[in-house]
Each structure stands twice: as C-alpha cells, then as structure tokens.
Picture 1: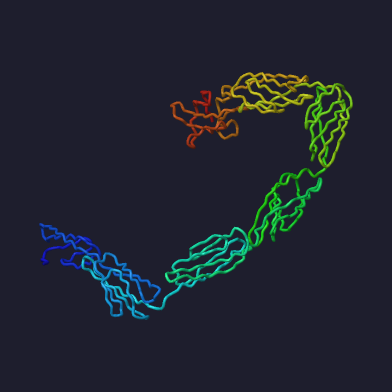
Picture 2: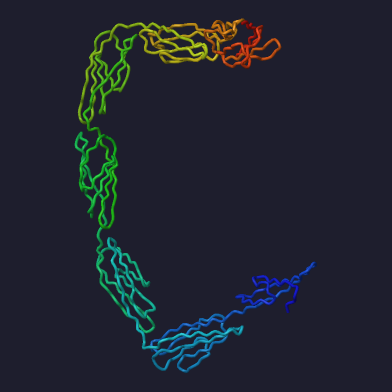
Length: 538
C-alpha cells in the first residue's frame, strides 16, 4: 500500500505512481525505487517480473479433389497443442489436418479453434465454396518483339497447378510468363499444356517469326586525281537513314554524297546507317594526298669571304625536289651550302614534283670576288649599373662572337652586358669566327666603383635669402651611390638629417635659424663615410 512521505519511481516507462498499470508485449522486469522525504532520505528497491506467454494464432489452407466435394484442410497454426474443427455442415473434428467430404455443393463457414501449451486459445473462420470438379483450362497471349527473333508469352490459363510450354523449336519451359528467343526466322507452333490433379488441357498457336533486319553500314569512296573532291558511295544493308561525318567538321545526311576538302591529310570518315530497328556505325580513314600542283621556289645567300652559297628551298605542295647548281653538281636536299670553285655566273635550276605534276624555277647566280671582313666596335658604360652597351661597326661580317674578358660571351650583333665587379677588362670581337674570313678587334674597358671621396662639398654658405649661396648642398656630375647626411652643432646636437643625396639645408633647425658658426657633418654611402665642417654666415 502507498505510504505518505514516500516517492515512487519505476523503470521501463512505468512512471511514478505507486501502483501503475502496464501492458508489456514481452516478458519484462520492472525495478521500483522508493525514497523517503525529509532531512535524512532513505532509499529502497524491489523487483517485479511480468511474464508474457506466447499467444495462439489459428490459420489453415484447403484444396479440393476432383470429386468437387472432398476438401483437404491443412492446419498452418504455429505452436498449437489441440485443434477443433467445425465444418459448417454440423460435422466436428479434432484431427490436426483433416479431409472432409461435404454433403452437397454450396458455401460453408469453416471454423478452426486451437490452443497452445500455455493454454492460450485462438479462432480462425474462413468461408469456402464447394462446387463441381475444376478441370484445368489452358490459354495464353503472345507478342512478337519487333526487330528481334523473340516472342513474349503470357499464360492466361485457369485451375492449373503446372504449366509446360513447347516452343516448336525443340525447346520447352514451365514459367507462366516467358521471353523466348528463336535461333532462326520461321513459322513455329507454340503449345501450352495446363495440368492439375483432375487432368490437363492444351492450347496452341502458330506464329511466324520474320523480324525486320538491323542495318549494316558499308561504303566506298572515290578521289579524283589531284583533286580535293571526294565522292562517297553507300553500300549499307537494310538502311533507311544515313549520317556522314567527313572528319573535318563537316557532315551530310545524303545517301551517297560528295565533299570538298580544304587541305590534304588524314581524315576519319564515319557513316551511321539506321532504320527502325537501330543503327550501325562504320569508321574508315581517308588519306588525301596533295591535290595542288607543285610550286617551285627558292632563295640563296652568298657568303662574303668565300665562294660558298646557302640555298633554301621555299617550294610548296611537293613530294620531291631536285637541284641543278650550274656547275655540273646536283642535290636532292631541302636546304644546303654549296662551294663554287670559280668566280662567274651560274644558272641554278630547282625542280619540284608531286603526283599531280612538275614545276621548275631557274635563277642566275653571280659569284664575285671575295670581300674581306674588318672587325670593329665601340661601347658605352653606365658606371652606376655596370651595364655596357657594345656597338658593332664591322664590315663584311655575317656572325659575331663577343668575349667580355670575365668569362662571359655573346653571339648577338649589338649585345648589352653587365659586369659584376669593377676592374679592367679586355673585350674581344671575332667576326665570322670559324671561317676563312674571320677578323678580330680588341678593346680595354674600365669598370670603376663609384665613390663619394671625390665629391665637392662647400665649407661655407650664407642663408640670408639674398639668392646667393643660400643653401648647403652637394655638387656632383654623376653620383650612383645613395647617401645620407647628419649635421651637428659644437655641442653635438643634431640640427639636420637627410637620406636624399639631393638634400638642401637652409640653415634652420625646427624652422628656426641656427646661430652663425661652424657645424660638423657626416656623409654616409654604401662603401664610404666622409666627415667635415661647414660654416654658417648671414
């Protein structure tokens, strides 16, 4: 019984009432915790287990025999101990799964009452119709798959327990719904036999399998001799649609088109042949050769100091070239150098050929007396950056080799070179180096590290605003170094400071004229420090 001054707490969701009502679906243990109310609370616990027994669940199935009145009942109830049947015609039975013969056709409410080993009871009632014997009736529908050697078969048979298909091609099946594939087109008699315990029934249909054929892509082509026009001939089978990809970004839907290409080369030609059953694709490579007549052209450069000539082929659309150099020699190279033995005129012939034809060009070449080179150069130095601009003034030269005296080189005509250190450097220019007409010129240049030691620094100025010698400033023509200056009075107080080499001191400190007298300065550069005095007079 609940007592005042006590608190009750049940686990598993039973709440805080002293006497809760619970309905567990499975066997469950509940723990009660009782706590007294006051300054010194006490706690006690107790345990209650509620056992839930398995319930009974009645069910059954039934089947008829060929008499139509005898019914076989199958008890499908789980965990049963006893069965009690009431067949609805006044007959009772306690057999587990009985066979009962009804007195006549009609509807009967069959009742099954079961109990299990725990004493639980359940009842299941099902209305059954007892009628005349049910013979099997065979029938089916079919649908021929377009473009395929296939048929879809769907059984519509009744009262069957087993089905057997005969597809008419030597194969059979037993599923109600079938997708059957034939090996060849033709006419086939398909039969379906429906069986049950009372007998069998057969249904057959004659069907013709003659699918539309899938397309097969095929083509050939014809290239006109030395032309960029190509004709394509379709030879596809079972085709009603065509799509051509000419491999150069162009296409056509004609059956046998022709196409004009802009350039020679290799092209992947693709034909997609199609009909209502699908499509087939064929890709073939077209190697389109030169379709232009060759154009013979060349240029040449005569060497200044020897009778050799550099020939350069400029021909277009050729497969091969032939040179006839006018002195009895020939060449088949694209570009080359030829040495003539004598001064004089030579008729140089170039013949360019391809499969479309031949073209030729003749030029008259004059081999004159050798002109000897003369190497010469000048330079200008930027002392602040140590950059030197070199200027070639040689005669009859065609190549330049510069050696700057510190290991550096250049093969430009007018190079710009940066020296890393001050010093004396012997610079050499060799023109036409490595040939029989080379010549050399050499110069000495001096790279001088800039210093503030040679600056002109005034030692007196008169800041009286008369426009003459009013400012203390440096006098220089070129000064690469950045410098800073500090100026002090006789007591060591700093009266002026600047980090700009173009400073100008007007004889003031904090906007007030300094007294006349001698002031001390310190000049700083990256490599030097210079001290001195300057006098202020007004």
